[in-house]
Length: 179
Image (cartoon, rainbow, N blue to C red; front, side, top):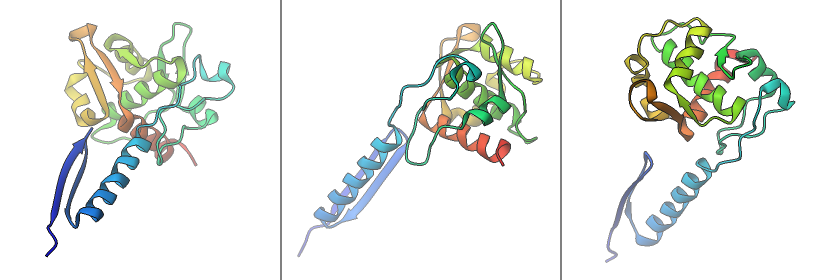
């Protein structure tokens, strides 16, 4: 009689659970680990504004995430002389529009100026310049809490996209602004 082998692991929000023959569970777990590693592979981001770069080099890329092309980025984002990133086009009207816009601006800062940690004041300025009325970011950012990390407090806080946030922003750009 063969013993059943059980394994349950969570890595960065990715969960693996299996029950069965040891060899099968170990093989499936190895496939899971390979998929998690591939999804979190990081390519060095580009620097500067979109127009100055000529092409946007890769950002965070996994198997389902490829960087958005430069013409689309130029259509969606605008970078002023002070480095403030704003949206030329707002995301579609929905209950999460403000959070979607903030997610896009975090992505814009990441690909435009190699700015991973975006200060709250810079993000707020970008939202206001884009035409989104903002009182407090935390009142609407919670809907996308799985896509970013926040450090600091109040106006000294900073938002950083995680890999899932990059993929979500790229997906939103493709759905809303391409084609």
